[in-house]
Image (cartoon, rainbow, N blue to C red):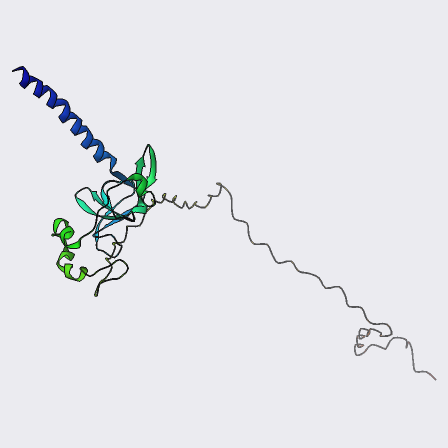
Length: 226
């Protein structure tokens, strides 16, 4: 009886320690996307797009290639490959980019086999049926008939504009009571100065009136001169 109790009591801390080690190992392989990144169906930008994750998202790192350029991650319910320059890993309390620091971080090294990897993760994807044309794919060499996936355009950022103040039209000012409109002023006439005759020119005299009939001309009084 005592031996059984001792075995149970000994098994409890062992299970607890194993759970803690598993939890710490899982947390140790978490990384953060430092910007918006694409998760691909293979370790190259030429593979189909699996999902897009925004910057600041936490992913679980399953492992990386031997050169630590691409890492296999799990993001929510999706799994795929992310370029390691876009992943930041916390090592001894300091954030470090996986690319260039993979040996220091000691992340697992894994290989990529397209057939088994796609069968396990992408059976419900539309491009899974074209698996044959991807079998001969090598990084940098696009398979025949390959077309890069079309990225949906991001919606533009619309900032609300403040409403413009209404245009106020002021009515004409009313005239005070008892005022009459002023009549228009007559035009100002400018008098021309008299014309001056040039020197040596005598102005013509006015004509003298003709004598009336029956009256002697002036200067002759009495009979005829002898």
